[in-house]
Image 1 (tube, rainbow, N blue to C red):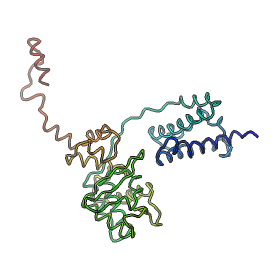
Image 2 (cartoon, rainbow, N blue to C red):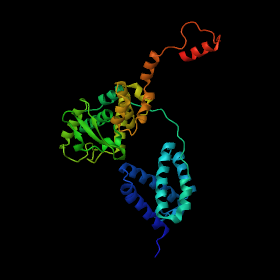
Image 3 (cartoon, helix red, strand yellow):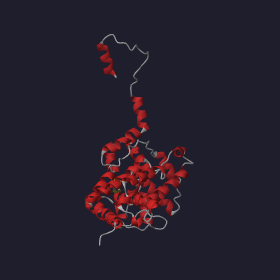
Image 4 (tube, one colour):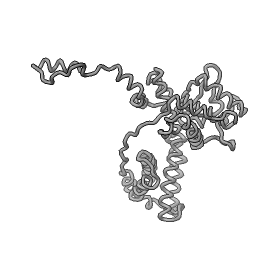
Length: 338
């Protein structure tokens, strides 16, 4: 008995998410979850038009329907072009897998793979200044367990410049408080790195571990929510948003910024640059695959720009001279002086 078209699609999805992505490709759980969420959104979009989610077939996942889904992301869900491209990347990956498993669908696959990515503009990177982080931490009530957790959470995020997924995924055995203190962060692409902890951060981490009665060898999550479950990245975002609202009353500069957990990571990079740490070391600190990623913070640091401007010689000093030259040699000398 031949399988129905919808059953074939379900089998392909299972093979892609259970076997191909984590085992054959060895991709990280973060990538797997991103692919899963993207395909889930696509199926829900198609089901909203055509009915039963369990009865969707390959034919319904046409290039035209996928293009409509991508437009829906931007117009209805207000996603940026970069998010739209992430979703399309997951869809492309699934259809490439499908082409290798079901050659009879190759024409269909090629039409989907021909859907282009959108060019994205570069947006201004907003980061948290050191003084702003201090204002946030000062405003947290440390007399409550949740407050002590939040101080350690935000302090560690700024200290390490860790991605929010790396921080909430931290386990007790990843924290090393013996001198010199450090934490083991499990980054993107299964790339682990050890990050030093500042003297101000180590006591905060020690207090959280002691309060939760965690031993150095435990595999339990360091940061948990009010129900005792591991904190999620969405929970960390809500915690930061709550304390940002309070701190903005004391630090007016926070009112003009839209900060999120990744803004603390940006702030760490700028803070390290101003402290004189070279970009290569910062790249290792933040877990960047290339130092070119770190170089973007050089353009972000306005204070460094002002210092460079103050040191630069002005092009015109005193009386402005004529822009006419008596001969070619004089013109060449002027060009060399610039």
